[in-house]
Structure formats: C-alpha cells, structure tokens
Image (cartoon, rainbow, N blue to C red; front, side, top):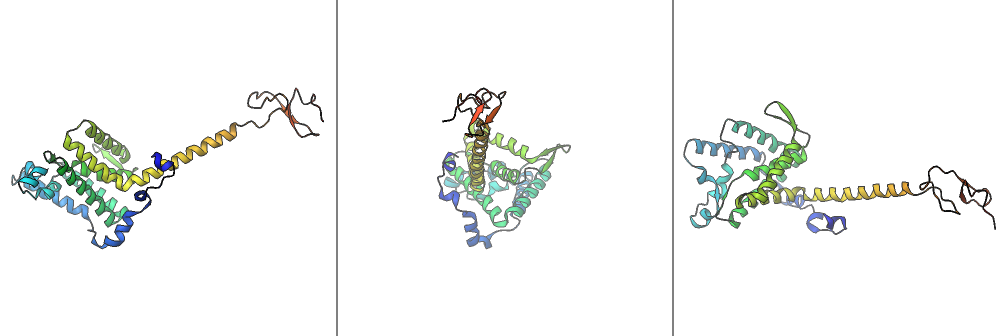
Length: 271
C-alpha cells in the first residue's frame, strides 16, 4: 500500500483492464453462469450418491492429468457438491442467490471473468504441486468473499434463527483462509493463494484506493488538529500563549497593534 500512498502509478492498477476485455469479448459471456455451476454440482451429487464415481475420481489431480491422461479432472472437480447431506439444497440456493447478485451488480461478463480466473488459478495450483488433490472449496469461497465485499449488509439467518450480516461471515471465511494458508496442507495453501489472486484482481485496486483515501483523510485531520492546537494569542514580551496558560487574558495594544498578556499590556514601550 505504501507505493500508492507515495504517488507511484502502477499500470495494472491504473488501467481498467476488465472494461477493455469486456469491449472485445463481452458477447462471449454466458448469462446465468451460476445456474450451470449448480447443475454441474447436481450431476456430481448424482454420480457420487449413485456410486457411478467416487470423490477420488472427480478431484483435480495433477499427476493424473499429466501421467494417466485423465483429462476430465480439469473439469470434474467443478462438479464436487458443496455438501453431501440435506443441506446441499440450501447450499445450492445460497450459491444461486450469491451468483445472481454478483451477476446483477457486475454484469454477465465480469462475473464470467471472475469464475474463469478462479478456475484457471485453481488449475494452475494443481500443476504447481501435481502430487496433491485439489477441490473447489476455496474457489467457491472466493465467490462468497466477493459477495460479502459488495453486499456487506445483507443478513443470513444462522441456524435459521440468528440474523448475521454477511460481512461478518466474510471475515470468518477470510480467517479460515488465513489459517489454511499458514497451517494447512500444501494443496490447501495453493488453493487459498488461487482464491486470493482471483479476489485481488477484482478488488485489489479498490482496496488500494481506499488505503490511499484513508491516509489522505488521516493527514487532513492531523493538519486540522495542528492548526487548531496553534496558539491564537502570544505575548510579544514573555512569549506566553493562550495554549501554555489558558487562565491568562490577552489584549492587543490600540497603538502598536501587538499582543500582550495582562501583566505586560501596560508595561511595554513604543519606539
């Protein structure tokens, strides 16, 4: 953040690269992409519960792609359902609400781009460490963090009873990411980094602008405090001020116009 506050311009921050891409490729956007992701998870749930596939068949495994030619893993990990219990329908509904809200705020292209970068970074993580298993948990978490950033005041009913603003759930999610980053398995760490990079691409500039604005605001307040703390009256002879001794009275000489404390107002001489 210091480089922005210092006035150094970074091209990738200054340029609205998303708008530039949207002008060229906006027509390629897939409307309601979140619905298709939910459908994929529904298919994954059917495959797992029907024992047509196992979790190990669907996860992204770099060595499986590179050495066993299991190319389907590049896409099948997106089919991993968020939950395997009764709460799957609830999880699907929440993701539908989140994805629809993001698409409405951003537009189809930007939401597509967010999903695309999250996917690409996650796949890249699988090839950085091809010996670990990669799932879509943190990828979906990045989508939730985007929602929490744009709609912080939305409330969810925790346990169907307790209303909690989504910004607090976002902080809890971010804390979980941090714990995985510093104390998780190698695969978890890479997935967290992938999710963070996705989030940073879309919100990093706004965060840096906010930090710069906060620094300017802090500087402005400090200057005002400094001005307010400056003495209004200073005795020309002894130098005492209304700040150093607020109990004193100060007067200005009608002849020379200078300021004096009550002790020296009648003792000074004019040249």
